[in-house]
Image (tube, rainbow, N blue to C red; front, side, top):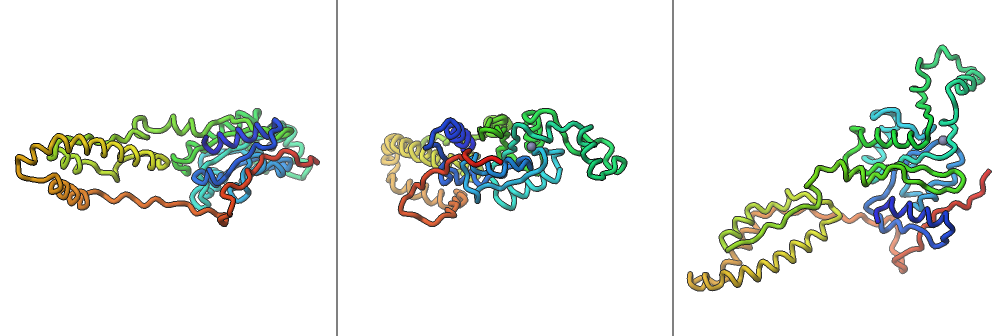
Length: 306
Ligand SMILES: [Zn+2]
């Protein structure tokens, strides 16, 4: 399961009363930290990041009234972009909540309340709804925000953008926009995970294959590097055995040994294969412990409400 699949699963189990439900953040080191935009409602203070089962250090918390994104280049977008670029956030979540007062407040009521605070209507922007971003549906607001974030030029194509709705009473999370699916749908067809291993032919053909086998140009998701390397290894060993059986009689006739040809191939490969980039392992922020698996961080919904 990917990070937010696990978060939702653990949250639902915890809300249903499963005391063992939780998340092992160390299993999702590649997807953390998360940048989340929520509403300013103080009732949310006790929910985050507990409702997600995430440790505080992996939760970059942005808030504005109504968790609203007004445009692809808004001030909140600027913060989300910097959360990713500077603070290293790997996934984004827009988390709305039920019973949101920004949603419930009509323009007339808002103007009345502002007036009571001494705010002069004539000094306010012309289009109040557009300026304050007031909305009529918490769910639609989350969908719209995700859409704007996804299409913002400030956010790269690798960051999943999820939309969630938190039940303010129970702490249950509903997955409104699945950012993994949106990413998958937008990915260029035929690129991801389809790197082909070149077939090896006779001895001369195999040299040709080496020329064209530019590993550095192959496109595949980082998480599949190990899998792909294993596939290449298996395929190469099988082809090696076939090749040896095919060419040994011909080489014997030409007075060359298979070791001589292998030497030429190795020399060619050393000289011409691009060196793959070093795989960086993210160091764990926690000191090594004797117990390799700490107890899971449990989604909490048992705080006292005011
Ligand atoms: Zn709210």
